[in-house]
Image (cartoon, rainbow, N blue to C red):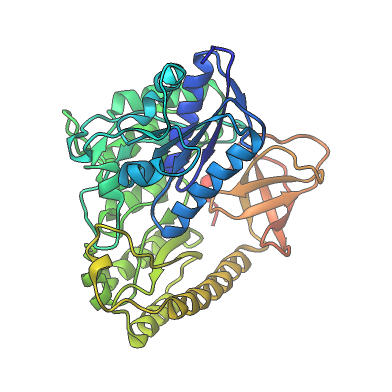
Length: 447
């Protein structure tokens, strides 16, 4: 491949994948490749995959077909979690030239540059995941408003439904010095908000020579960075300590927004999932957050239809979620994943039942989201503004993660302004009234 070849990237899955894809894109740019949109004809297509559910696998196949429709002679490379778990399965997909596992994906540029010297399709480079100890740095950078910064990778938990330890390996962390250096890079790019991401972010500190915890990291970020805002992407409830919650409640930079996976509101199902907490602990975490930050946004992941989930188990989960002051739910229909303990169980829940339960919880999520927003109406929240949309309106997010729309002639890109929340629009965006910004107001402490 020549240095003036073009490349297009497509990312499936989580925020961590997006941060890694952004870093990979930068490596292509540094080598002189022309970056194209995935919908355009390109010499090379790189598909960064997820494999949390069977649906994610199907999305990978669909992306391969789309790439070849744009350019039938293109080189197609598949990387990421699905590539680590099922390399031979991907290699057999018509049109796939190269499959790179977890350790190899960050060297994709080197592999691309040698592809023209190789013959045949479906070449696989894949290292045993248990031997990977290195931590590859990554952060996304787009429109200056928000960046996703990877601080941790891998997981040691081995939940009975999850393939992530098989796809990403053991828990390991980026050094605090390097993370702070990356944050300085983002400061120089005038990024307004950084989301700290990882597979199991509360486990930060594993694999480091230095002694450090996630609390140590966020404390260092608070005092050493001038970036306006930070968010914690997702944190396990058993790792969301009182100290972390107290820190966020008093922070001038970390936003009052927590996303904590629940997975089930039934202790019997949580035990079978091999989760490291029970629902009473989860309730305690949510209520403590709300005690210190009444307007905090709290989201939860929930899996419906786990093997053996009886109707009474689901009703227990539904009742538990109804009583908790959660702001939204991410609802997943259980998907059998090869090489997990749950996949081999004989008491699989019928797919129709799983989908019905999913629909019930999605409706509950909509109700909870609206109720959360209604509680915040007529209050004034700090909003970080994103680029102006094609409709001429300006959009942004409050500190507690409510999407806001204002009409203003002057661009507010990457600025934080207080906005009075007035009306809920059809898509749960809130119409806001821009307020005069006062330097004396501590914006992150409103409400």
